[in-house]
Image (cartoon, rainbow, N blue to C red; front, side):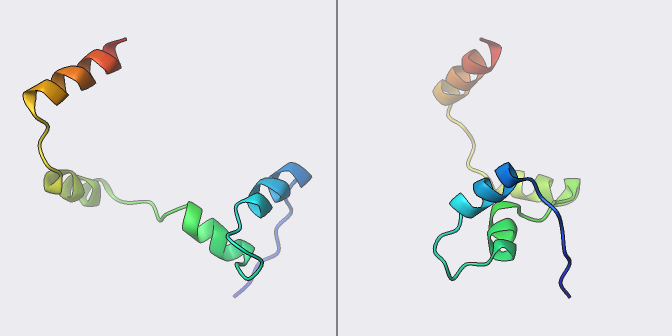
Length: 67
């Protein structure tokens, strides 16, 4: 199903600039740039898969966040 939407000239230009090539539709650009929202549980599961930070990297990250 398709829908018609109205967007500003600025929004159109920004969307157009992000097309990979002329064969990519605006719908494809939007889907590529705006991933589906995830539930908290999905995010938690992904977080658990991440490699743990080393103590040194954790210190660097905490310092950067607190600045």
